[in-house]
Length: 134
Length: 124
Image 1: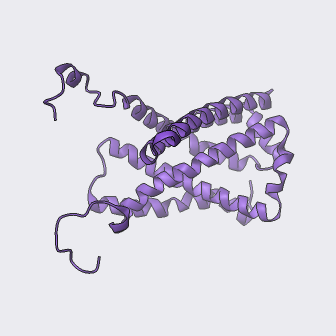
Image 2: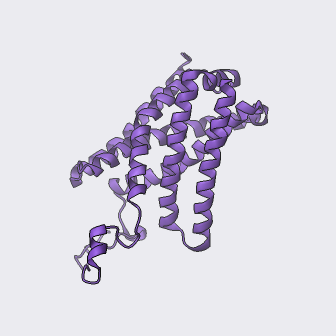
Image 3: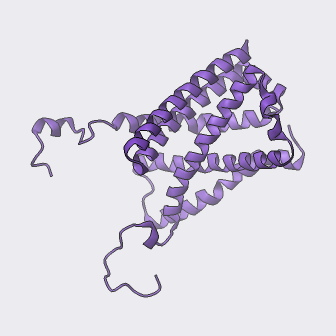
């Protein structure tokens, strides 16, 4: 990307030659968070089934020691994934309505959504870490 | 482009794949439902005292909690089945693609039925 290409025509959007930019990152992140949320939905369903069967002792190890840390990290990650997918999904619906296609605005909104998804994540987890669990 | 298509196929406007509009609309309608349901469910679950097992059981077994969970999980499993289908179709081909498409459908349907039944048990 340092020197000017001899051929001024646009490059094909192949990942290995394409400079990363905000809208590309937010598009890929939408799919990645979607796949993460798939796993999260499977986990939530399995948990509800275990609770109904009274078999939650089978996953008691997830709430102790190392696995508890891993579980917390996964849950916080899933909260971010849900927040991001929700915000970017809203953007997809607005796109379907023909709103929000300007290049500069798209870049700005990509950054706003990637960083903005941290806010609901923090709001949901603040009581757990600040001790004010309601 | 249009020269080789019959007038009837142009009127029907379905393109080469013949279907897909229904998938597109279903993805968006379930997204609209989740726009409301997901924050509501996340807040209620976070305030329920979960992951403590007895608190979670009380939440999932309460009338409001059971209905909210069933609505959210129904929309989530439906939306994720549609979304994963697109991802599988985009990146995979051949037998693996077919196998994962089947697994995707059966997993979503199976989890939905098992979770709905579990919520019913917890409500009794």
